[in-house]
Image 1 (cartoon, rainbow, N blue to C red):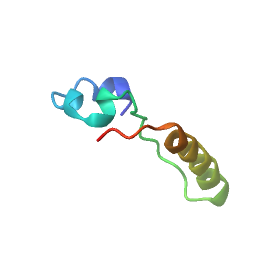
Image 2 (cartoon, helix red, strand yellow):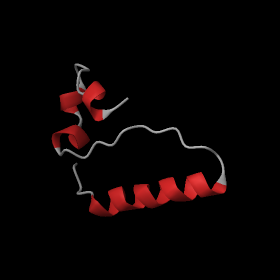
Image 3 (spheres, helix red, strand yellow):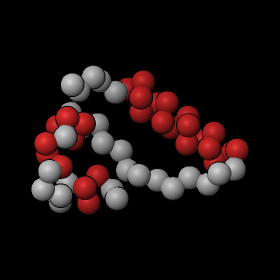
Length: 54
């Protein structure tokens, strides 16, 4: 689901990550090394930019 699709759920706005604007889309990533490496780099960027929300 995209963040926009998740926002249509009744409990979405109760999530601390949603309130902080730190929601990322779910992505299927292949199990090959290069695909995992690309996704891990993106994930590391999201985590380094994230702020504590709880």
